[in-house]
Image 1: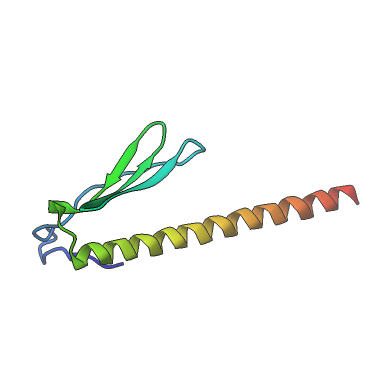
Image 2 (image 1 turned 60 degrees about the horizontal axis):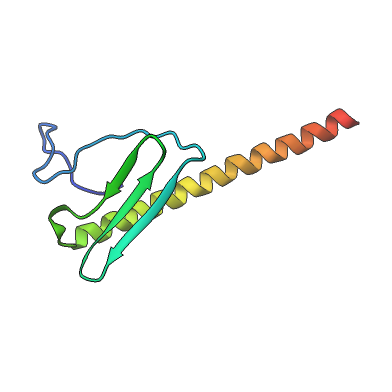
Amino acid sequence: MTGLTPTPDGADAPGASGWHVGVQVGSDWSARCFTYPDERPILVLNTSQVGLSLSVLGGVVTANHINFAHSLVQAANEYLIECERLLMDRQADDTSGGAAVAA
């Protein structure tokens, strides 16, 4: 994981982002990216209870924003892979458990 590093005393570096949001996702979600010809994009994640919009601080895209977007894609891909693994493991357990009971 990359990004700004805290200062030696543990404080956030100047210009550091700061927030924490925890969302448990059910079936009531949406994810969209709004793009405009001459403006920064806006990534929007919604559930029925909470919405989150991500956009560029200051309105000007920099190399740091590109790095953030790449990190976001990588983290989302890792999340996807782990969710798929857990679902496939559960389905395999359900299938093998059902066969054992029938025998």
